[in-house]
Image (cartoon, rainbow, N blue to C red; front, side, top):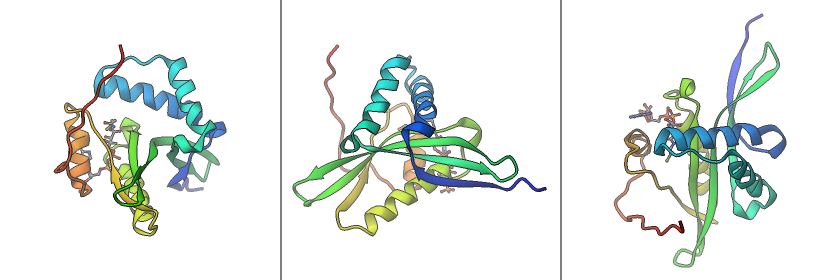
Length: 162
Ligand SMILES: CC(C)(COP(=O)(O)OP(=O)(O)OC[C@H]1O[C@@H](n2cnc3c(N)ncnc32)[C@H](O)[C@@H]1OP(=O)(O)O)[C@@H](O)C(=O)NCCC(=O)NCCS
């Protein structure tokens, strides 16, 4: 019997996706910023989003194998709403994007991005998608530009308590 595979973007739930999302965050921080995150802190941080939907919403890309009736989580991203008084509408910030290495360059992030873009286009409650990216992460910057985003307007400033 042929083992037909399908990729699907779905809203994440804590029962099925917590472990994958936590592992992806730890892998991403290591890969992109050489940061070693504390697993327990990340688990609490991800759980806090599931506990309070106002904090944000995770999406995952799952691959389903018809033959084995099994599902594999291959990517995730977090979306965070930000109210704009100028626009009287909400900007969706894209955070924590991660695609497992062996699934990259198969347009999985492009699928997740299109999913959000469609949500913004079809709903007057939203007006934009935004994200920030580490200056050294040139690969991800290229991806965002390929998909039609630009960095023409803003610079990001921060102060972090040590
Ligand atoms: C950045 C990342 C999310 C991209 O995901 P992906 O699923 O591989 O990207 P896609 O396959 O959807 O690529 C979209 C487009 O960008 C291009 N692209 C993908 N990776 C690229 C790279 N490293 N350099 C240049 N172009 C790239 C693709 O060819 C595609 O172009 P097309 O529209 O002409 O087909 C993934 O590489 C990743 O998880 N990286 C590690 C974590 C990370 O950097 N996260 C972002 C933090 S801000």
